[in-house]
Length: 536
Image 1 (cartoon, one colour):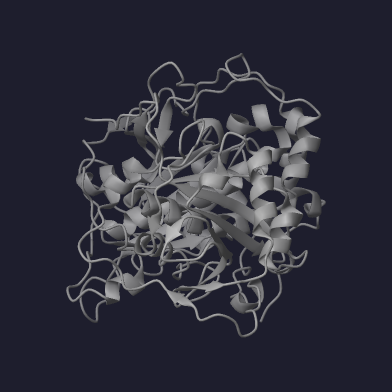
Image 2 (cartoon, one colour; image 1 turned 90 degrees about the horizontal axis):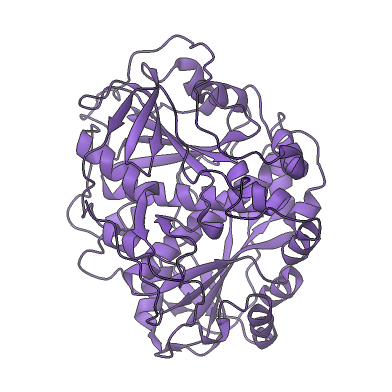
């Protein structure tokens, strides 16, 4: 066992940041920005005067949605996909299906018309996606690029392979890196309205995005490894980010699922010299004063790391709730369904149930519920450990309308199985959810998922960086559930409108364990909302 990263600053009042609904009330009492006015930022980041590379039409089919799960690959007699180079076709599919525009909302109620591959509060999409190619990909030289989802194009920021200082700062490049993907956050895109609370929303969205990137990479035959702990100054300088208004939040190392050639050393690009500071020009339209979200900026600065040596493997078991005593026999979730679950189709179908989410009343067969939950807690390759480890989050499922399972609260185990937790007052929590989020009829849901994390262990191991890391961990699980729910015809609505204490009491957690995601699962009814998938 080790101690938290020495580069993390002291606490800046994280207890306040962990609070959910009550924190929102306090923050919104101070006022919040309005959409549609001069303070509303552009929905996509646009650079000026830099080389652009338009990507080819993204593939409509890319592979099985479960290919990133080692457990799923072991159940298949044939080898899973393995990609040793990134060509133009793979690059287009990787970027589009990770964070591209998937659907447009039309009609009189289309307040937020542009839908990407992950859920986002009011479709603000604060995440910006950067790609650093370790070697050329067809007519695109090795170098650093920004992905423009509105035009499905790359803007080149630098040329040259991944610099050694960037590899050292991120701990990447050990297995023949093909590319690095960096999920950065432009706080202004959400903070202009949500002020300091945007820190939570941005951390959640990075987790969802990283989870989606892992799914897409796996379907394309790539293995991804998530790096949460890196030298912020080096990564931000490499991408040309100021570190305050926009800053890197997570790095994904992409490499072949199997090393190239038996007994051969992994492919490695030529080392690169340190590169100068860049200040690429971007188009700006908003004028909101960043002082309106000064608490967010203070926490982000406190979470910075410098230097190396802070990637000590964590004590994974310490992050999870202890198992309950002897109880009902767990309900196994069965084997993976036969045939292929096409990931591109599932991502295009993924939605949040519409502005007014009223699930239909038909019961959900238990095998369908099992298919969307069974991979949720599969190990994630990350800098938490040398080998992939279970996400640092716990998952509880309130089953409401599933044929073959009694209504009530269950704990999701890694076997995978659902273990009933009798005697919990789930009806009071359900009433609270309906009251706090009236746009979602939670009482009609097929199931409600609660994802919780251990705040105390996050602070102990990661310092002030723990807040965002644990939201990333829960976001990866939430995106797995959302995408596999879409494959079964269900919508998954992320909501932060819940009373933290009531949910904690329901799942049997102490104050160290904090619920950070609630997902309402249900089959969406037909409505006047029209969301056709984008075609090419």
